[in-house]
Length: 111
Image 1 (cartoon, rainbow, N blue to C red):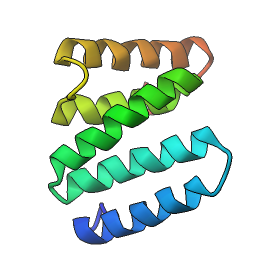
Image 2 (cartoon, rainbow, N blue to C red; image 1 turned 90 degrees about the vertical axis):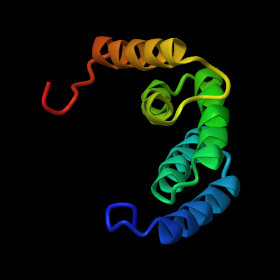
Image 3 (cartoon, helix red, strand yellow; image 1 turned 30 degrees about the vertical axis):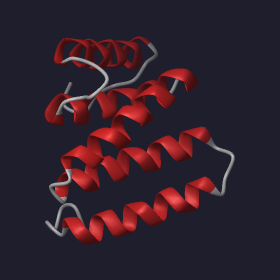
């Protein structure tokens, strides 16, 4: 839905994903669902709501050591701004997360 430009449908689907994730004990699944919701909210032009979701998920990803998801959230927040961190902090979180993924053997597409 996001790729098709249907932000409202993307948000609806993403909210269902968040609800489904709430029924599981996996923090990773919940945070990943929040990443999708934040992106969907952006596609619908709901930047304040996206920022709120992404900031909360960024904190959860840090507490749980979910580095790739932390990187993804920092990328979203680099574009829309964070209510909890300034732009320099978000850039640093994004870059450090990417470096950690690389050090652990991850390979970025095109890299």
